[in-house]
Length: 392
Image 1 (cartoon, rainbow, N blue to C red):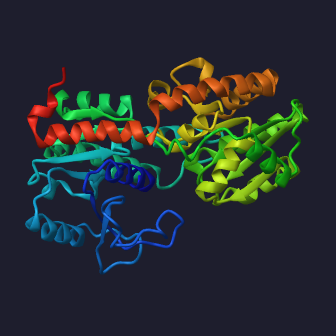
Image 2: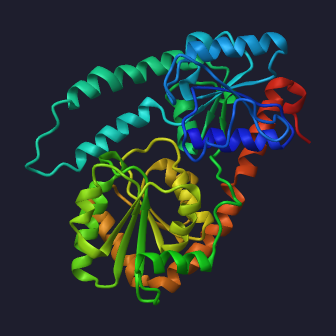
Image 3: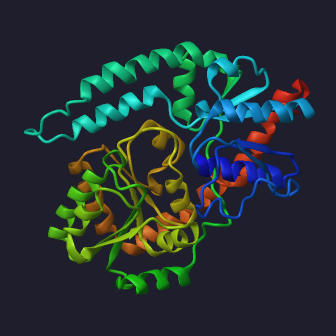
């Protein structure tokens, strides 16, 4: 969500719009270290960081005070909230508001189901399962259905989320807009030199018989790492020419190290390092157990010219892997993931590269920051003035 905001607002500012961002105190991450609250509005958004909190700690009431102060000077044409950054009891007072949903409670319910389904036969259900399901998630779904109508416009970042908002959350169709996420098209490209440097640094073979799988993200259960760990452990027993590179950090890091030299753990990578990662692999694997939002890593991999393996969720199937040529989809379980890995290895690097070229062509049309910014711009203009809602 943070990366989505950074990409979108920067793109809109560079298109000539005056963009003000009301946010929590900035941390020192690579994405924010060059941003200051007095950034040049002509090329970058103007940042308003609220006080009375640690970096990254959101306090909507403090941000709202800053917003009101600026709005009194010159009323904003459109207000945009990233998910519930602006609570519904405030949102209902803002008629020119649009909110992008990066995950809704109904999708959280699906996640709980998938995570429970991967339990071993002799593994007990977690003690907090019933409490989480009946005490938190189900009531939250009902609450969301009741209060979502307080937001004037809803932006769904996947086709399936848009369908849920219309059909389950009962939001009128004219107030639901599907705008897919986008990533910096200049930041993720195919580069043979980066590929060679990456493989050389990790000691990975560059011959055409070796297949390198890659995964990126937090190394936690709900990102599907129990699936990937077990599936790859099975794969290396039957194939000697396969390798796994994992970008990220978390509890599963030590488990992957148990698999020996076939697995490389890189820790968290900055955007420049990610370029090398995507170029260095043959296929990108996303075994997530969370069918929420729309994962940017799939888009980054495809823009970098790589085919993908992804859990078969409606959001991914309908919005990203819309063609079998773009990669492989699997039910979120070890057996299904192992099976598609076997298929990919059997196809070989040359065939995977061909798939990757088609992924890149599609991603360049669908998942760029430019395309996303234009879609938001079109919606915001329509919200500002009904004249812009009518197109020839």
